[in-house]
Amino acid sequence: RTVYVNGSYLPEEEATVSVFDRGFLFADGVYEVTSVLDGQLIDFDGHAKRLERSLGELDMDSPVSMDELRDIHRELVRRNDLREGGVYLQITRGAADRDFLFPEGAEPTIVLFTQAMNLTNSPKAEKGLKVISIPDIRWGRRDIKTVQLLAPSLGKMEAKKAGCDDAWMIEDGFVTEGTSNNAYIVKGGTIITRDLSNAILHGITRAAVLRFAREAQMKVEERSFTIDEAKDADEAFITSATTFVTPVVEIDGQQIGEGVPGTVAKRLREIYLEESRKLAD
Ligand code: PLP
Image (cartoon, rainbow, N blue to C red; front, top):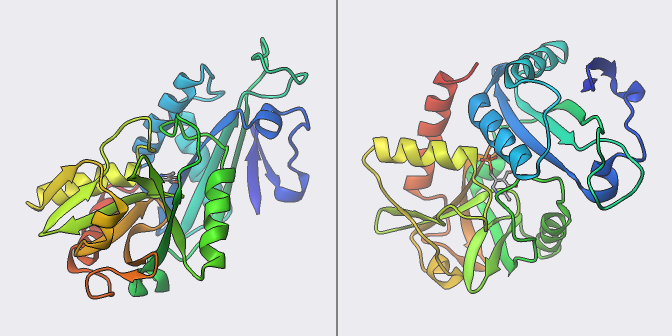
């Protein structure tokens, strides 16, 4: 695989980052994952906008413009002959002597790599996911897409040990989101998902899916919901750049609806794939 590090395209074995990098020492960095379908980037503009916001919230600079970043994404997809999968991008504050205070004049580190994945023919999307609920132990600025992912990683391990696919996180009695995706339920035809705040990541797929749902005259409510309300819903599903819309059929061992992927989730997945392909570049 060819990866991109600080201005160079290199074989992955030759790519290096300093042991003093603040991404490594402090998780002082942000990232994005943009999906690739038919060799094209899905909603790069959305990811670039969120990246700029994440960087701004952490008072961090991007070493490249968003136009240059798009070109780097495209070039890496081309060099790796990627047809379907994702491009991972990470920007950290750079390398400096270890100190909690931000260093002055450190050069940000930028890394990109591609990952081939089967996104459209996903057995998980066909069958639906089983999730468990766990306490949300993450920090209070989940709207910033930082690389500190230990809590979600622990959550996914717990789900795996329970024989499940993923976990939904609970704070103050309400579902925040999935470990790496936004969470939704459907009740009486209405799509319900948590409103935007610092408590959740502002999903790029979420924004697109809600827009497509409203355009298709589906009812959408952006509000908090409890895990009990979710267990009592007609349907449940998640969204993210690499899972698109994926149904959830079981929560904490309790079947949702008929225990099979719901009609709203299936329809939204189809609409998303069709519409996002039109916007691909
Ligand atoms: N929520 C969390 C915690 C995530 O990590 C992600 C994606 O990685 C999402 C939601 C979904 O965001 P997006 O649709 O932009 O991939």
